[in-house]
View 1 (cartoon, helix red, strand yellow):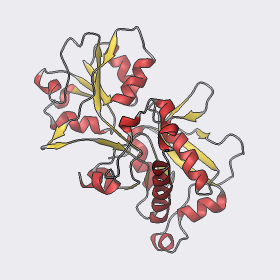
View 2 (tube, rainbow, N blue to C red):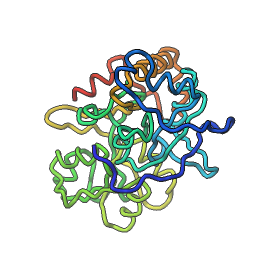
View 3 (cartoon, helix red, strand yellow):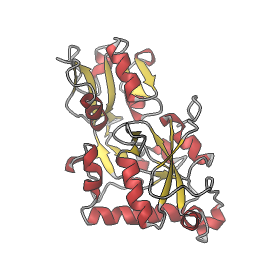
View 4 (tube, rainbow, N blue to C red):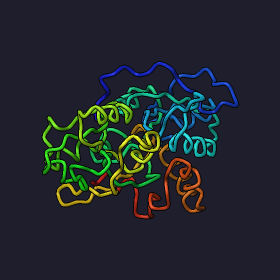
Length: 297
């Protein structure tokens, strides 16, 4: 995954509104220091704040009408980082395609945006275990005039599909035979929706969760979301698993996050955090759904 071609948004949104943000920049991490327990996690605890990069993709992370950064990832971040002794989160909203590049450039210390764990991304970042698993779907005109129901259909029916910049659906489309000219990339779901309305694409390819959220904002406008499906690439089912990601040196931070995430799962407290954003029991990861599994592909 490469850095976005677009500039990072300069405005930082404070997730924890109760206490003013401490005047602190992004942490720096030395691998040897991290192994000895003096890396990003310790620095964030001492400062009481951590910087997290989010993308504008409801319901994973977005700014609501009041200006608050919310969604499943920001809300989960609030819960887990508080348990780790970090009360304030400085949320920086950037294009999806710039998240890993910004993480490794130390613009922030963690990223979360409904980002799927893939072998390619695991080469550049350390993923936590997933907080959800999700299947794909299409948003199409009501009645689904081209009959797009599964991953192979766009290529077979010469359909133009919209995907998000840097998202796995673009890779799915290419590997299932959609020509490059028929794969259109957009910065966010609203941009893809406008392209669908204008007839520049025949379908938007995202997770069912993302498309259900998008459709809820455009009810009665003549569009629908197909049934969920699982793409098969090179004989393997592609189950999307979303997770937070950290710099590879930050092993203490990854382990601490995973410990708190597992605690939420064991105590059945994860779904209540995600449920307000359209997640169901069907999206909850099982014991076998680990970062290591999805990094292997």
